[in-house]
Length: 452
Image (cartoon, rainbow, N blue to C red; front, side, top):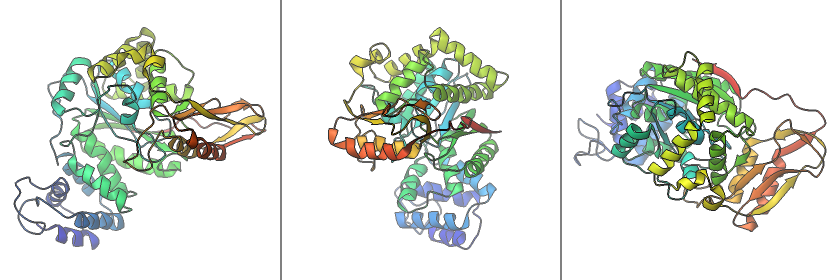
């Protein structure tokens, strides 16, 4: 089998067999590991395939697409390209959540320990931020000492002990995706639905899950700005997951404005702690956390429906059990548990370098999520390139959100950064994202649609 022939087959509109897709996934993962063979010979996958051939195949998929059957088998092949987690010895249902990304979307930080407190197992593999969207791993690492690089055996041990582990992708988990994700980003082949589906679901299948809840964002700060595109991807994801014997529900949710009241790594981690300690001031954040968590509990068979699941989670917040589960996770992964009680003494913080004021009285009519995310990156809270350093204390505190009343010259946002020279660009980006008007806007629901 030769990758060159498979490139030509897809270029000409052909469909791949499961064996061919396994070959490609193995090639992307580095081959069969025996060091033998070449990129054009041999019966098994090559030990080394040039990036230009993998890139050519990706472009052929973008141009020609994949059938539904191909997408399912491609996802399966990607999941099998390394050494999946084996959590079969854990009796409790294993559930996870995946978000397509947004601004202020630190939901996972509160959600994972909250759902684990409901006697479920939550192995949550996460990523870093790039561009205007934040990354869960960066937010976790704002806790001094917190380790996100954990070997699979230790992940399994921690899950058996406290039911939750939040970690980065290891070398053994779906390695084909790690290679192809980087190539897609560099070759303008990101926006291919089969490739997106395979990338998202292969890592979740490799986690040995029983159920998965998907948070598919739509709006200015999301990959998909319109609901129709998000809905189309969501249906494909849910359909493919079910064909892989993974219980799945998708929620199409809004990302027209940032979630919650803060944007930035330590700021969002603190907000998650406060939510689990009973703070409800970040209303949309709390609402979405309970909706996603309720579905996770329901899919795992621990509640009759998502509403009952959400009520159970509310009780775990009131009792303090959710906060204690987060404390246990922080301690288990080397973090300083004092962040739960003395955040001002432990979390990294950056000084306030600027404020943004409203130019008129009325109501907040625009708070563009993408623009706010760009402002946060300008402050140092995010990356323009993967090698960029993060200022964990940098970020934005939103004093006003969509629909809130505002007076002329009233502060609508506070900006924080270690480097004061960053303030001007951040203020410009935020100011362009904010508008106030005389008429209060009608706010769309946080959850726009449920895909079952």
